[in-house]
Length: 397
Image (tube, rainbow, N blue to C red; front, side, top):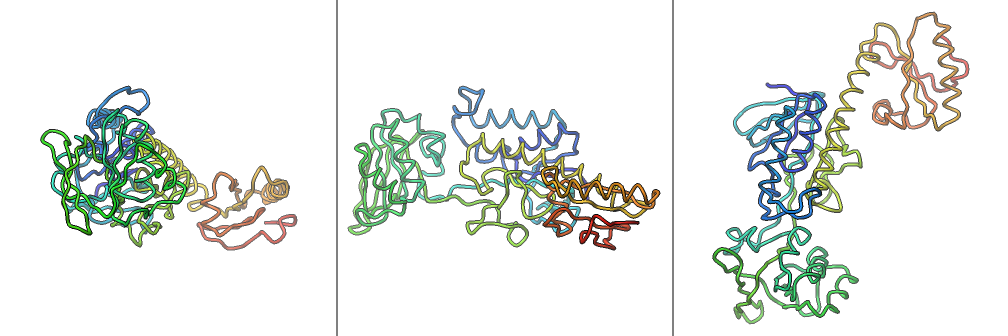
């Protein structure tokens, strides 16, 4: 088993950014990616909204990110993850090749994939007129006609957004006239927009074009009639699928399978962080994925430093340790901490004192089920032997 300080699952923009920050922090870092390095962003024809790059392609930007990570020392391992064990201090990952990797800190950046229609022309013309992201590609269709497939919040809101650029937006809806699955406000806004045309009781059956999209075939579900529509672009919004199947029952996921994580990218498991499109979040873009990766790596480094410090000063201490939980914002805990400091000094080196500011180290407080401050525990060999919290004004050792 090969061991690392930090393992990153997923080599998209989130994983690559995490690799840059992790390796730059001198952590032994590896990125595991099953496919093309760059993930979904690698398939993007053009990127014009990534800060500092007025115009670039997905492959070029992802190559730059990968090269950047490797220059700092991150390894990129082309292997598919088959299993992951997050239950121990050393998290282990098993790949399809039978290799095993371990690390105390893991960043989950597996990304997500758009749900496909699986109709002729869709895969072949992806990136050449077939898109799943209006924010990424809408400005390529200035004064052109585009087709939207879907009628949920994302589809209708993106249809309205695309009208800033396109001359006409045709929305293909599976339901009867007037029925959409999006919120009422967005529906009313779309119905009022003169650039938007709805085609009801219909589905897309084919996307036509040689080098780029030239048209689509629409089937009416009630009559069975097929209609050819000319269009230069097709935006498909029938859902996204987070690549989190391996994480079920191993980490907290929402009902749709997205990873639950806070603003520090911390998940429900200590030492495990989430970043990118597989995380519960509002905006899924290359720039937000890179931001997630940077935040996750910085906090993973902090976690490892805190764990090493805690082991040295608490778990492996040669004498009993008083673990004092306090906050500089809480006057009572400041006074209690002063009493503890005096009591430890009067013990003539029988015990040592370790202060835990819970405003910065909530995880350690959670480990010992400390919810209120001031609080103090006496530990020996890392095990709690006495709760001192009842009256911190009369503590003696």
